Length: 105
Image (cartoon, rainbow, N blue to C red; front, side):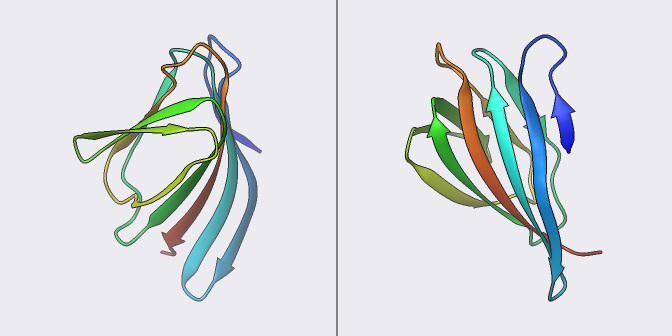
C-alpha cells in the first residue's frame, strides 16, 4: 500500500506489512527516493523507534539537528518520536527498507 508518493518523481514509501504485538504496532516499509528528493516526517508517538537499511544509494538522515549520511549496506536505529528528514543527495535512485515500532494508541 503506497502511503506517500512524490508528485514529480518515482519516489514513494510503501507499507508492506503491519502487525500489532504487545501494545505496539510493527511496520515493514520499502522506500525509494529519486536524486534530490527529500521527505520530512512528523514525530511518531512517544517511545516509537525506527530502523533503516540502505539497499542501494545514499541517504542523508537529519535527526535532532544532526546530519547522518548512510550508504549502501549500512543501517541505523533511532527514536522516531521527533521530526526527521530523509534526503537523497546522490545521482542515483535511493532504495531502503524501514522497520517501525509504534506505541499503539
